[in-house]
Each structure stands twice: as C-alpha cells, then as structure tokens.
Length: 208
View 1 (cartoon, rainbow, N blue to C red):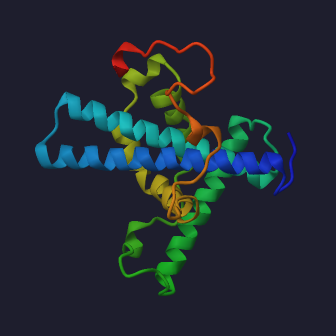
View 2 (cartoon, one colour):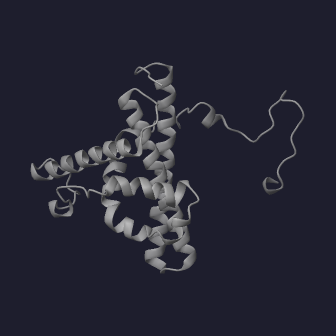
View 3 (tube, rainbow, N blue to C red):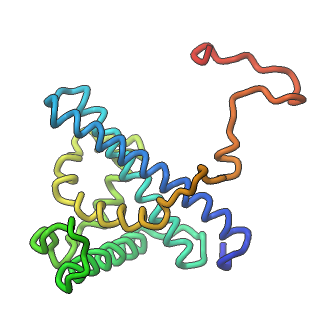
C-alpha cells in the first residue's frame, strides 16, 4: 500500500518500527549478557542454547526492522522480493561501512573507534542473502536446515556488519525520553480484568 510521510499509515508504521527496534535492542542485550557468561564461566549446552536463541532473536528483529525501514523509504508497504530485499540491505550496509571508514580516515571518528584495519572496504557479496537466510532458518521458520546451520560461522563472518546496522539504527530509533514511549495497543496490553469487560476470565494457572 502506498502512503505519504506523516499520514496515518506512516504514523502507525513508525510506532511498529520503534517497537521492532526495542525488541532488537532487548535481544542484543540478552545476547551480550549471555555471551559474557559464556566467556567468564565457560561453555556448556545450556549457555550455548541461551546465547544462540538470543542472537537468533537479534538477527530476526534487526532484519524485520530493516524491512520496515525500507518500506518507509519507499513509501510503500508492499512486500519486497527476496532479491530486492537483499539489494536494499546490502546497499545500506555498504554505505554504513564506507561512512565508518571515511570517519576514521578523516579524523572525525570518536576516540573509542576501532582501527581502520578492523573494517574491510567491501561487505561480503553474500552478506545480505545470508542475513535473510539465517533470519528465516535460525528464528522465523521451523526448518530442518536449522540443526546443521552454523550460527557460529555466521557470527564470525558477519557480526561486524550487523553491528554497523544495529548501532546506526540505535542512534535514532533507540532514543528514549523520560518516559517509555506510547506504542498504542502494544503498551496498552494487559492481562488484568477491566471493569465492565463482561464475565471475568479465569486466571491462567501459571500466573497464579
């Protein structure tokens, strides 16, 4: 569906984008905490499971945010083909990488920035496709390929580029005011019985 910046559809899309980034941010923080435990206390199946799940959620929510951001750039909510999604995400990631390198080279990067040698000149040709595939197979869909899919290899090869996307998005969509943002029905969700809502519902056993 076509829309204009500032109209009702755009406003609703911005609310959903804020929500999706917050979910991405939560997942990244969960991953960082779990990875810290893995590093400090050693590996075992349980911590690998938890760290895998957190990173898979991070991939999922970052990818979904990118699709929503592309829709806003295009002023169109129509679903993109996999080929077009790869093209958009690859182009945006390369732009972030180039900007980061240029800031280091011209001396405008912050003092905590990595050395220029940390950043290659080009993203891998397969990055955007692998990002989409891992979003699908590691998190979004129950697919038999997941059992043999090495998230470890993906992390080692591509985490630098996910980091570029994540921190770029965080610089705007991660801003929070003094109060948590109003996300309409998302932040109005409640399991409490409302007065005048009809017959009270039995409280689920696991919430008692």
